[in-house]
Picture: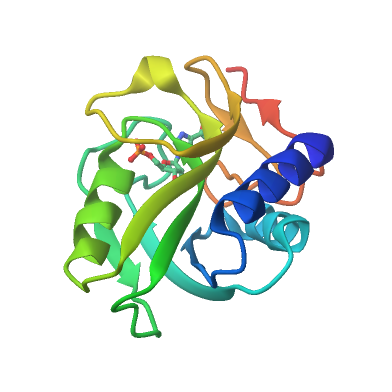
Length: 160
Ligand code: IMP
């Protein structure tokens, strides 16, 4: 994970050059990934947070996304990089992209730690990903099941 996050961080910095993207992390799952990614990228950059919820103690997406915490920054004219823990059905990312576009940023790109391509219900443009994974429920490195296991220093599968 560390090696791959470092590679992707350097790739993102190479693409943005000396521009100052705003990394918008979707809490809570992305918090550890964001911490490693921003240090791999190096400055200049800004960071803001949003929080969405679509799962409540379940491993299946309900499709309904709601905003639990909104942006603090004015992002008009900025380059936005959404930082996600995992793109699963795609509902959350699609919702976030449309929501951020309303605030008239210059660009919106998506970076995800994990990409569950097989589970996609709607198409979304993933610009950067660390790993493609099969359609299994995973935890650790920030990801939870019912608020547990975020602290695991690795990514593991929940086997029922
Ligand atoms: P989507 O809207 O179905 O794409 O789901 C995205 C969100 O669901 C992610 O930001 C995660 O919070 C959560 N999620 C999806 N799959 C997993 C998983 O395997 N483990 C933990 N959380 C997951």
